[in-house]
Length: 298
Image (cartoon, rainbow, N blue to C red; front, top):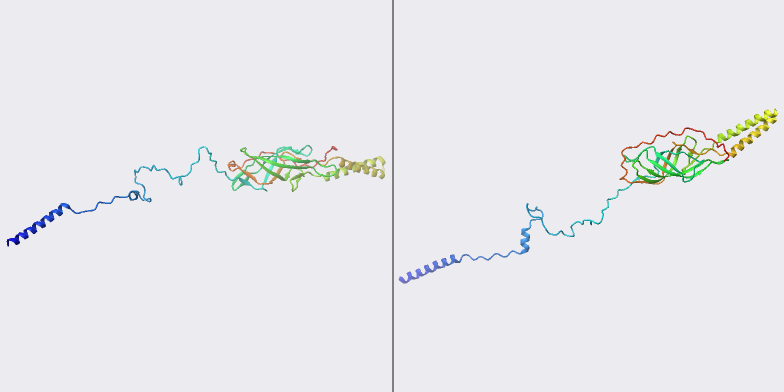
């Protein structure tokens, strides 16, 4: 009996000792694994779609050379973008008025001519050439009328235009019509031609014939004398026509000329900033006149 009690006592002591030892040692846990640098960077960096936290210092990392925009060198000037020119197409008509009188009596190739625009040229609601713009040209050829036949001729070429703001452009224009006060005309090539005065020539012959007839009749007091006088007068009239030139071609001051652009006119848009249609000078037009044959045989 005592031996059984002794065994049970020893078992109880053993169990109590095991429990006390387990409480002192505690549960065994494995140490945490060290975080890798890559994982730390991935977890610490904010997502690209989320804004950086307020107060975060700006990044001091160098910009990527492949994505950073290239800045121009201070020594290399940057030229502005050139604007496309404004084009006044060939065939455009410009009404002009002449400032200096011209006549085939003394005109020479190379002599200047000066004109002025009478009406503004507008394109797409923009004033390109205001009225009052100056136009300059030169005489290319001058031909006096003949003694027997032929008319006075002028061939001119317009070369330069000066706009009211001083902007000067080169162009080529030829006349298509002329208002001279006389019977001058313009052919398809732009040559200005004078009148022939055929009616005046016929009148000269008839007048001289009549005078000769009257003188012959008075002198001879017969029909034969009148016939002789008529023949003499006819000859005198023909000699007058043959020895004197036809009417000189004249372009008086105030003559109007319509010109046609022979090629495109290019204008700088930065200098075409007109808001006023302009105004031409007041010049009296030439009066109507009849062609007159020269009274001198040269």
